[in-house]
Length: 371
Image (tube, rainbow, N blue to C red; front, side, top):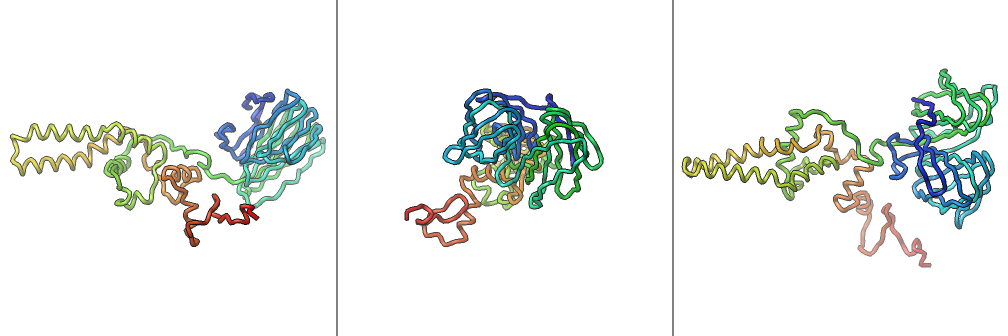
């Protein structure tokens, strides 16, 4: 478990078409709203125009609480909601939503497949223990307390912190931990409850910390340098079981596209031919040339690759059975196939005339609404 009180200097402020947004918290911490690489995001925005269009977020569900003002949210072809201060609306980010009214709001965005809720706590000077929703299917949970007005003292497992107006306390924990939270104070607090799962590298490449070169790196370079030929993956069993991440593959491509190893090889062969043509017999020249090939394959070419490849090299070589969702997508894109769908389809008889959706389900005439 970890917790932190976030203040104005911790918030990321940006403009949107209807006003300004303060990003209060995001998970993971290096997630990006613009790139949509986050599980959940808490923010507070101002709508400075009488009419504003919300950005579409088809992969997310949203909950909005009005902090100041009144608003009508019109979800096109779905429904409308009139909200006063401290009232909320839940809606899909896929909706085409338009707001009418100048307000300041508090937003929770949570990626579909996870759960998130907002509620408003009317604080008193008497301690209270807010009830927590139960979603044991998720490993991770977050409770956040944003003070709209007044102040709050929050006790987490016996430790008390002060949260002032316009500040936010965020508590992240594993649901296998015991977390007891109580609160008291004056004013109003917007509480967030978020339940989710997250796998490192789910939205982007897994970061590998750089290290100094080692003997293990050179050993990896020997293998890489000698498998840079067409159809090598059909010959090497290891290549069938591993995948090079984007950073490593880009470095390998850089070496290959400059033809530096080929140039060095032919320069060495030319020097050997020039210097040894008159000194060696035919057999001696063949032996010398074979020795150059062995030296080039075992030392020279691996050394060239080692100068360019990111270290530790082993950290960039992944078992194909342990790829993150992001890495799996990149690999499928590189191969030009979707192996997950192919495996699903392979379980069933395929006539060549059936159609399937992205989940591998057959689309028949009924689902295509032909009847």
